Each structure stands twice: as structure tokens, then as C-alpha cells.
Image 1 (cartoon, one colour):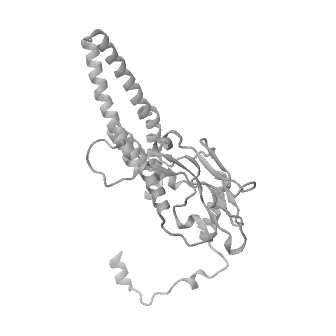
Image 2 (cartoon, one colour):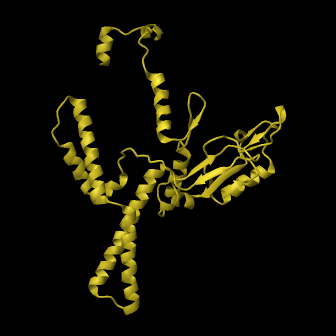
Image 3 (cartoon, one colour):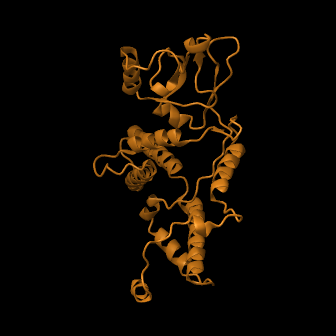
Length: 302
């Protein structure tokens, strides 16, 4: 749903005019979004989408226009972008909404818990950890971790593969055998063995899906019960949408949306704060301890 909802949800979505109050229409709008499971897709660009074009203290800005979608839509179109354009011929700014984003983010390596359902994963880790490497203790640990990561990635790509595509293939094979059974009434024993094996495989893959999405969702309080794959999946999609950095403001106050420009701003931000200034006496800036431990006490601590 895209357009002018003529209502705001939070105090930060308004500037100027009368103070923000929790009015009936705002509560109804919030309840409408909650009941229908709609998520605000956020935006990049100017914060407010409407202005009354008055002067002085009578000037009011509000975010009346927005894009909301269900979690099912977010699953189908995970790479989207919502941009607030400049107000020119109207008191509202246009919303540019694209379902295809040019962003390409490479996810960092993380050990997938679903790998533990494959006994071979232990052999991969054991084999990589047993390789001889040179260096001091910390260098050997770092090198073995790197070797383990590379082998697990290759094994995941070549052996584990796409568990979601596997589920589709298994379901297609089950549907084919059950369709044949419906036509001929009784399947040969070999086909019945295959069908039972496919059903067991299907159950196993569903379990892998639940483990996968449970880890991705970071929901720790759900312990037991029926399969919650859909719940974990939606939790992951919503969290990922909320955590995505789509734009940043640089030192000159300009908003940037390009991935490389955002990376540059983040890099310079931390570099300016964590680069040591060689011209200052750092020792004089550090707090001095009022009391110190002796040599014997230090040896005892060590």
C-alpha cells in the first residue's frame, strides 16, 4: 500500500504546529497496521513528505505519505527501495518506489547450526583443524580458523547445497508418486519404498528449514512446539528490513544512498575517532591510579 495516509504515527514524524498528541485517528491507524500485519518500509531522502507552505511559526511539516507491506510481500521482494523526492509542484513530495535495489551486500561468514544435522560437518572441521600450520600459538589458531571457514563454505556449496531448492524437488517427486498411486490404485513395492523415503527426507528438510530460520531470526524464547518456520522467517525479514542502512548524511549535511559512499562515510567516521594523534602526549591524558600493586602481588595475579 503506497500513498497519502493523512496520518502520522510518532512525534518524530512532525515538525512545527501544535504539539503531537495520541489522538483517536492515530490509534486507529496504528491498530489497522497491526491487525493486518503491515510493516513500514522506511525511506531515504527528506524526513517529511508534506508541508503546509506557510511562513514562520505557522509552517508545519509531516510525514503523511508512506509505503507499507505485509511480511509475505517482503519475502517475495526483499530488494526494494523507497525514496522521498523533492517537493516541486505539490505540497506533497513524490514517493519513488522500486522493487529492485542495486545493493549487493556480501554476508559475513557465520557457522550455520543446520550444518550440525549433517554428520560430515564434524569431519570437515576436524580435518581442517588437524592441518599443520606454522607460527606462534595465536597465529596457528587464526590460520586454522581461516582454513575451517574456507572448507565449510566449499562443502556447504558443493554438498549441502540449497535446502530450499531440495524441498521443492522432494515435494515434486512426492506429488508425482502420489498422482500415479491415485491413477493405478496400488503402486509397486519399489515405488512405495521410494515414497516412504521421500516423506522421511521431506520431514528432515523441514526440520533443517526450522533450524535455519530459528538461527537467523535470533528469537531465543521459543523453545518447543510445532514447526514455527514461517514465524522465524518473518521475524528475520522484519529485523533485516529495520536494520538496513539505506542512506547516511555526510559531513557536509548531504544525504547519500550509494553503497560505496555509505561505506566511505562509515570508514571515515571511525577512522577520525580511532586514529592516534601523534602530536599529543597521550600519557598525560590518561587517568593516574591513586594506588598501585606491588611486584609480589602482581606475580600472584599473573
